[in-house]
Amino acid sequence: MPIPKNKRELINAIVSNYSKLKKEFENIPPSLSVIVELEGHAKGTKMSINNLLAYLVGWGQLVLKWQDKKQHGVAVTFPEEGYKWNELGLLAQQFYKDYELDDFETLQEKLDQTVQRILKLIEKTTGKELYEMPWYEKYTMGRMIQLNTASPYKNARIRIRKWKKEKGL
Image (cartoon, rainbow, N blue to C red; front, top):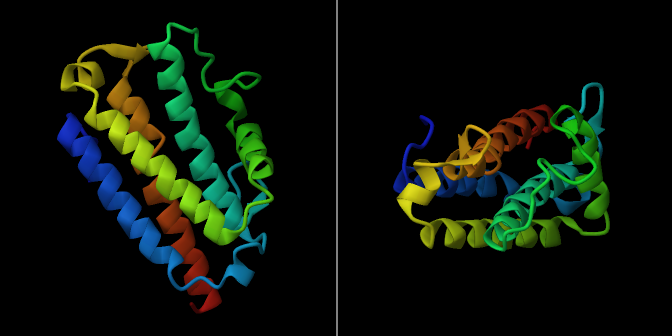
């Protein structure tokens, strides 16, 4: 799927990639969701399906936090307070920790809620706001949303499909 260039394409990319990802969760036994054996987000690390869900929830929540701060005129530290762009592996580890007490079902529910909130944010944002002005450095708001939603959903699906194939699921 090409990089979205407008509001409708962005919504379609998120909905399409997320619905495909959700289908992959359907036949994963919750007991396997905690096993740490997928390639992690930091080089040389491993993660569980639950960690992957936590990662997706974490980035989605960051997108919402960035927009909330911007909307209220508060300075945003990208990607997150205490982290630099070259420390995304550490940020991923923080997301895993933030949601470590949540089970497979709860994480899926949190991701569903996060995706719905992001889609509502996009719906109430104009195409001009999404794609015709810089939002973070040279990136538009639409591009930043896509980089932290539709793209990671696609990547997560690929990781899960590979893992399921190895598991014979």
